[in-house]
Image (tube, rainbow, N blue to C red; front, side, top):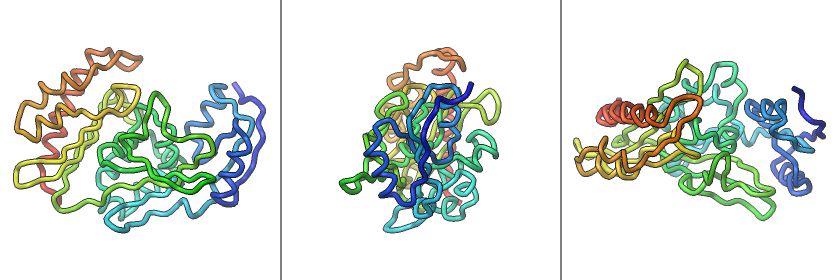
Length: 279
């Protein structure tokens, strides 16, 4: 199929992109386009106007400031994957990036596009949630930040509203006590995960605190496993507690029962990673 007819505009600044969005209720932003172009071609999306923001260099930066890593919305997956700053200061994201699709997709796909699209089986939304990060959003009235815990509101739904532009994400920079874990299970490398898990914690000797477990591929949004988090912090049976957190429905990838089993498998693997000291 081919997309429905649409207009095209190339924004020369974030303010111009915001103005165009505010003037057209049925406009969409074009960044990497790795999800949008597919939905256009299948006519699952039919905007009247596409606003190309690829020329906005201010959204292509990775900066470390005040203990936070800020990743611009237009940073490509491949750019982040090759970034020494991401590897050092945001190692959970660095672990997740090679699992995203294939090199051709990562060469064009953007960090902001993945977060804004909010696919429940995607890696980066879960990483943002596990890290307790935040999303930076600009609109005609100024800028605001939304915590990751409040950003993902439903299936492909987020806190982004009319006239909003996601400009960056921020995550806490890794400290010596920080611990991270990431694992996913897919039928083939590059496929969407049947189940995945991104995790972060702080270590105090052998004990862990501030544990955040974010599962993906198990619900309409990335999902915190609060009962399992508490169990890990109190030295209790996290696998037993996980049954309180997850009730996945079956899909084309796997049955609900299979997803529950795989979630337990991943939790064991990730708990082992969290126990490892940072190199």
